[in-house]
Image 1 (cartoon, rainbow, N blue to C red):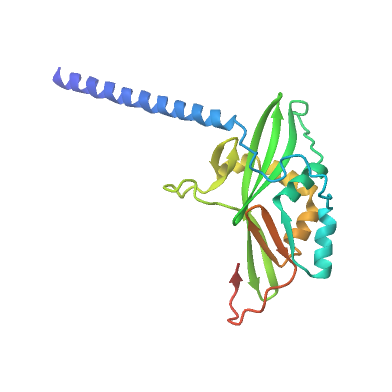
Image 2 (image 1 turned 60 degrees about the vertical axis):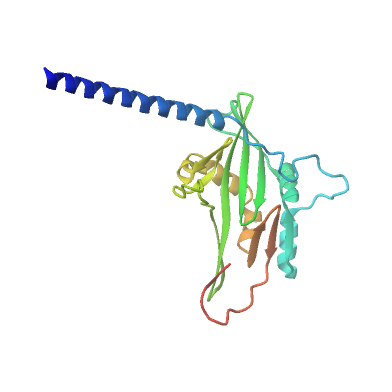
Length: 232
């Protein structure tokens, strides 16, 4: 009888722990879904206000090509990029969700060393945001400069460096693995600006992302006297 009572008591404790774990997971999922449903704050973005009448609109494709042809450095501000996207992006949403889901706007947030590309969608009249963190990695090799645009992959939390962060769903920062859900949308977006992306990230020899601005230079950096590959 004593062994039976102990077994029953142990079983009850395990059941309570399982219920507690399940409730904790459900609450955590509910909190995550709540923050995912809240669009991130975009008021800090340069260019989010109405265009300035005194600032002439620039054709970024022509500006990029001119800088490459003449061989001079070019700085594009976050405001210029966002206002250009607002003028040129044709937002279309196809497939089964057409009429329910619409792409409203695309924004770029420039920080020191990385960029965040934000998509604003509307689902049944409600705004949602998704974003992806990106960085530019360049290496100087024997055949010139090699440029790659990669996921930024900063630490998800200061105390939790793995998994690396990938972007934001609403106000919630998500790991890189979640970006598989939205990668097709970003691939489609990149295809709309294939020529501009080629000029900015393949024809430019030096690229630097700073807070609120993108610095581009078509001139190759000076030769590395050590002869070793250089990353900058």
